[in-house]
Length: 462
Ligand code: GUN
Ligand code: ZN
Image (cartoon, rainbow, N blue to C red; front, side, top):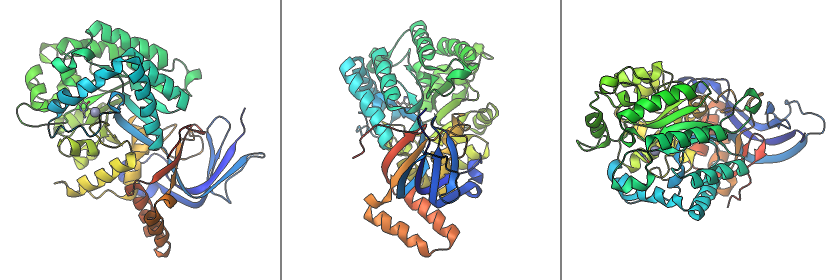
């Protein structure tokens, strides 16, 4: 067994399992800190350097001057959109999908492009300090195989599945399968990657069932998918999709969904409540993560909360597509867990700190104005995502017993940031701590290295 090791750095983490509203009290900082990791990649101890217990023979690596925080969790990202950021679409989700996304995703049918895309995608995640991601995969088996190979090779943690589409406009034709084909392919992928037993619990990959959004299947498809989900859910398989993202007029997403399925609420489509099929198996449950939820109603939020669902909040994507702002207060006060999502390619950055920066700004400016504290931002980018994915027993904070998933951030690469951090030394302790964390997250700090289960992800970070 490889030996245990210790990293010395300036450590900031949340502790325990607070909700986002209780994050402030859970914030811990160890300026002269150390994290002790065993040979299996599990955290043995975290704290001040002179107080942690260091096993005999442990290797000690000195990263003083760097910050060490829990790895970022991205709860919503699209693998086949790795090359589709900044597509000039402007304001309309459905138009942007047709003009750019469907043709762009179709390119991954080519094995050579798929391999390059998988490598670039995994590198971009690691370079951004993302240690865990919930990934909408490709429709093409060659691309999915390439993605799994790269994820395994780099040792990133992911919840992932193919993006299922049986219906769509002409531009989506290359991405469509029949329902039976789509479900058979999902079943094969789940069998190939999802842990089967307690012995495989350390596995970094987990499977998800992912219909692209309501407009990608028909009523029969959602009924069948409900049955499939009921069967797979027991095994710990996840579910994710988009929900109520863009309400742009009578031809926008939300209006089109309600009209096509003749439902009162968008969520009805996922909740077994379409037409005469009411009462069919629902896709809502623990490990169900809904991206966006910008235009949800009180009733929908209650149902999401009751079923234990989570929301992937993607403010940079919502800004890019003019989708509006997720109602932070209403979602969090309903008791729904919120994680951050980059939503690349509608989101224009892989960096979760950049998403947090957008979150802080949009909620400050929203009608239900909320000023997110530095600890809440850290929660959103780390523990909130882990809770959303029901992985917080393993990741999300730096505490003994959890897996050693963390990021080293280097403030010295940005002279102005470094000086801003130094200037906190003269402030009262709590203010200094808050300011350091805020400046670090908002400033999009340079990632020095990304570590999952105690292993440094092998990627060159320029
Ligand atoms: N809704 C359906 N597909 C997509 C997608 O690829 N990106 C976003 N942001 N929303 C979607
Ligand atoms: Zn998305």
